[in-house]
Image (cartoon, rainbow, N blue to C red; front, side):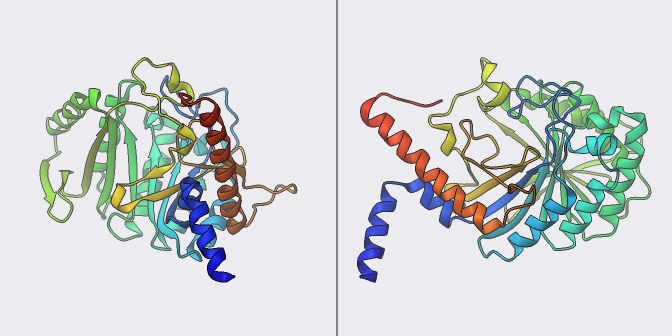
Length: 335
């Protein structure tokens, strides 16, 4: 009977490959700390702006799920914290929110990526505290304990100047004793902005610029003053989800609700995105979202294993819905 059940399960899963991936793949976690942002970018997949709620995922909730994930063998030791705009916590939530989470997560040797659009560098009342906290967190941990990801594209206002100011501040800061890693990301059509950024930095007094290659990965690094390492990356076009669906250059994805994987085909990983509205979504930009709540009826965080089981069920139901649609409408494509 047991063999029959297992055999039946394998055959059954062939018809529902996405739900099987959700059940079995390793995963990392994304925390969309808030949906509020200083900007109103036309390509924002979260449709973030100043009119969104200033609510943040509580610090205790992030810590709870990080601790829960560490007990799960499928967690691949990666956490991303983003938004909206994460650094708006200094203005609308708690000035200790970001450094507390950095220290908590990096102390557990988890790879941490902080994503920010860099608008805070324009805010005189915020930039000093944010710079000091990020430098202090770096000095208190191993080199590259966490990564800061900055947006550099035509959609973000003042992106080139803000990236320049931030990198200049870190490169010239005498209190920084530890190497820091920055990831500069944009779209293929904006690659020239990165070259302009490097040229501005190269021509800035008291900043040296050199290049090196990690021979293990082939990754190119640009290095400022020997302690600021920069990784550039550019993608073909914005996803046609959220507000970005209104952009002519944004490419739609067939059945976007299943577009929730990250990494190369050889090392697929699952993205689980927690947001400030109380939901967990498969993928960061999954279009028609496969989503379940992370809060229970009493507003408390639900156990991680329950969430993962519910995501498998929700994915299977979505696969059934799509299969029925495509059976009766063979040319049906969801975008």
